[in-house]
Amino acid sequence: MPDFAYTARDLSGKKLTGVIAANSERDAVMQLGAKSLFPLQVTASKGARTKSTRRVPGQAMSVFYIQLASLLKSGVPMLRALTVLSQQSKNKTLTHVINEVKSRVEDGESLGDAMARFPKVFSDIAVNMVRAGSEGGFLEDSLERIGGFIEQQEDLKGKTIGALAYPGFIMCVGTVVVVVLLVFFVPKFEPLFARMRDNGKLPAATDMLLGVSSFLQAYWWVIAGVITLVLVGVRQFLETERGELVRDLVKIKSPLLGNIFLNLAVARFCRVLGTLLSNGVPILRSLEISRHAAGNKILSDAVVQASEDVTAGEKLARPLAASGHFPQTVVEMLAVAEESNTLDKVLVQISDGLEKTTFRRLEIAVRLLEPLMLLILAGIVMFVVIALMVPVLNSTSAL
Image 1: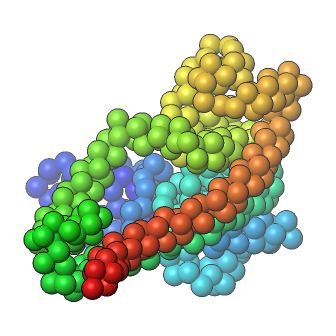
Image 2: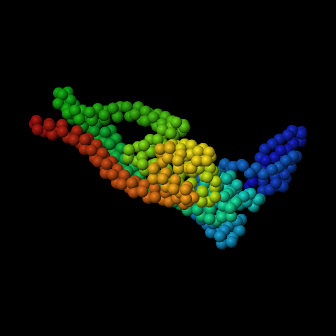
Image 3: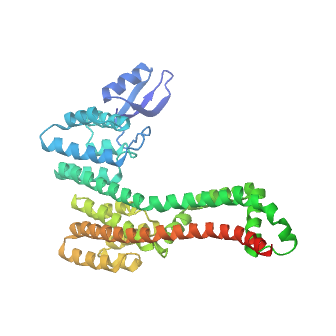
């Protein structure tokens, strides 16, 4: 239900202000009367946002936008289309939100404003594209593009997670194996090597291995505490503005994966900016939205500076090139696109090209990472085995 801001007086004459949820202005007045309040002014509170909503999976949102576009193109009225989608939705949160949006639209609120009340469900990109489509008369096309954009982002996320899942699994299993060997397996050999250690004949590798094992057994709680404190401290630091800058700078400057993270962030920025521009959203507003979509504080700050230069009358490509964080090929393509007035189309093409190139590099990096992690794990296990076997072999030779 919509929210209405009211000004009223109670029975003692005291002036009160607040917000009340009602189906209409008349319903709001009746509710105030039932509370023994005399309304002086009741207006629709269009800027209010609803809090009690959870996030909806991207795939469900993509289906919602595409189906809504199809229904509207088929001539189905907006309210009827929203009713159908709320009945078909299997996600309880999305069903509730669609019903709320329908109620607000039924009371005369625009679709974009109604969606803006649910920021956890409808992103700023979707809201601004819907508003532009409603004002420009191409709402169905805007909804289709939103659905396609979300679907592409979900595919991108799925491919990235899928590519990194196996190396992450190997790392976790390897860590557990090494800890189990050091804590439970190695200590069983210590009584066998006690005499060799007293005589000074214990190999240095074996002595070091036993020392590490003893330290882990005796001070595991200290290690766990230090790791916990470090993780908490790092997490708190990353939540600060400086921490975000450091994290994002490390991501795009790291030796192996830096170019991959940078290209993915630039691709997201270009795709969002191109999609917004093609739907009639003004360039300054598009830059404000797309800089957050990049997911990188370094690039976001560069886009903010570029927005100021664009406001002063400059082209977009020049300040992006001056930041030093955008690839030269991307900057050159943007410069040509601005001259030919095809910026929206070229931005989407840049995003497509960057994503294809990046995934090829990601596949190569993952293929190199998997055997590298296996070699590291095998090397650690081999060191443990050799460190334990050398004293036994030396004892056998002496006998």
